[in-house]
Length: 92
Image 1 (spheres, rainbow, N blue to C red):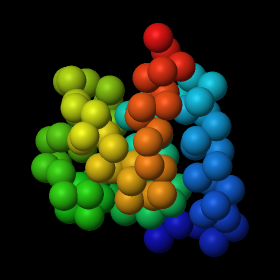
Image 2 (image 1 turned 60 degrees about the horizontal axis):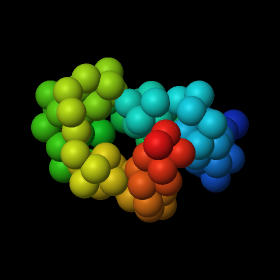
Image 3 (image 1 turned 90 degrees about the vertical axis):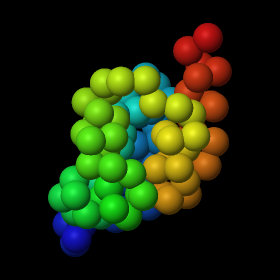
Image 4 (image 1 turned 180 degrees about the vertical axis):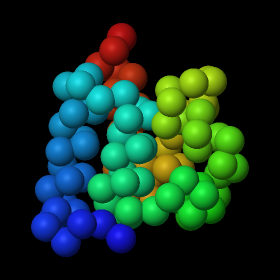
């Protein structure tokens, strides 16, 4: 589980802001969600997100070419709906 001293809302806000600023990649954000919010290992987090372990590993390493739907399905679990679309608009 997450560290007791970290407030989940504050962590989520920090991750959202870092994504918006371009300081954090999608993969980095997913890894931060896994470690800082859930405290789960990759196997359990992949199961929670209904992803294969391989897909999660690729996401966290910013490898491969994930679909918007795949990224959104992970972020949505943390109330971060539409984060992928917002970030993509910021890049263009």
